[in-house]
Image (cartoon, rainbow, N blue to C red; front, side, top):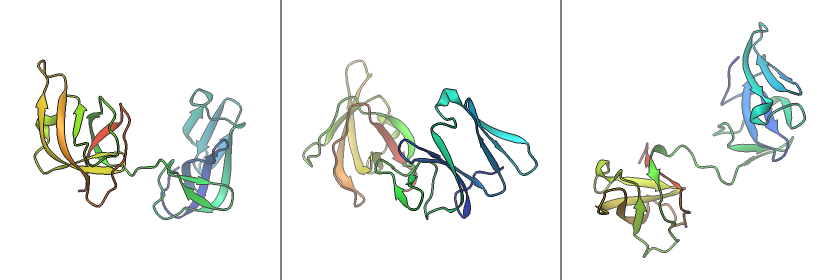
Length: 179
């Protein structure tokens, strides 16, 4: 059994939104049951089980065979309606290491350059990029509150040809892997 990211194989799709949760080799068997989904290799060895507890079973999942994966495929990145692929609108490629989260929401104004976060800014250097959603920002400086439980970052928005966007409280902040 092998999960695949390129080529042709079998896909396991959630019926409610057509989200493709996994792709497997063509020789693997995907057995949809009422209480679980079992994936076995070509020798019949059970190598992956999805239980009803995670919400996947024969009533809400579908297997498609001999499907060619789209370029850039990743698990849960695309939907498949039985004939065509669409990238999920909320997908963000792995932006890197999670630094923390926003303590307060920020709007989509270029004049909003202060961001309240947790106490992680000691590890970010001036001029480095951070990423929130699909927007990258250039880190300038930070200040701490009196008990050092919050940092207020100063950033330049829309770095690296990204677009300014509003971000909700609790949104994760990443240190990009590739800046």
